[in-house]
Image 1: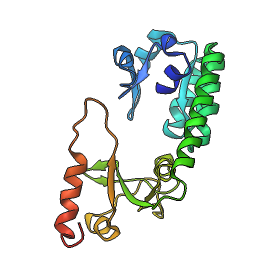
Image 2 (image 1 turned 30 degrees about the vertical axis):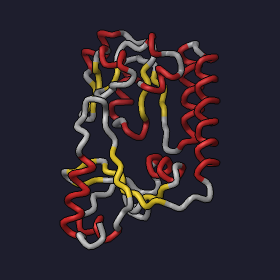
Image 3 (image 1 turned 135 degrees about the horizontal axis):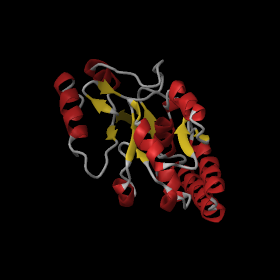
Image 4 (image 1 turned 45 degrees about the vertical axis):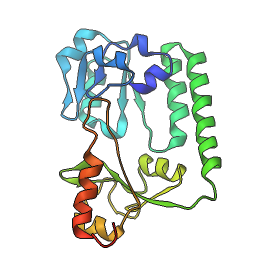
Length: 209
């Protein structure tokens, strides 16, 4: 959803996935998909010209059904920061907003380059990214979030985890002793999750936190 708005196609969106809350105008759009799948009747009632799907995050059976129903499907995959600009350009081409999308793509790449330059040579901050508290969940070094942390001068303490989204124990987290705890949140979400995680770690390692 954010990519579509950034590419100048926000005004053409007729439906979005759950938790699409930025920009604020996205919140008024019908929600036609979530982690459980697609709300088929709602989606078809909107009559979209094209459906943007996240290939690695959408069930293949749902993608196949979209195609079987005769809908035009365009896949968007972002597994690294280098994938963002091409995704913006692809959406701009589909929506006929190439100029806006190109400007957004160039702006994004420039911001990435600026951050990389600004943080080069600084002391590394060991970091834990809190995806979920119950169960405790994070990301490994292959996830784009980990790349974003590194870009800003951090080092993901679970970068070496074998799975993309590991579920470490509090004991494991305490042993890795991160200097910073980060978490993602929408404007409407509670803001104390990192504090809860910090307090839980402190119970295991009060001598180091």
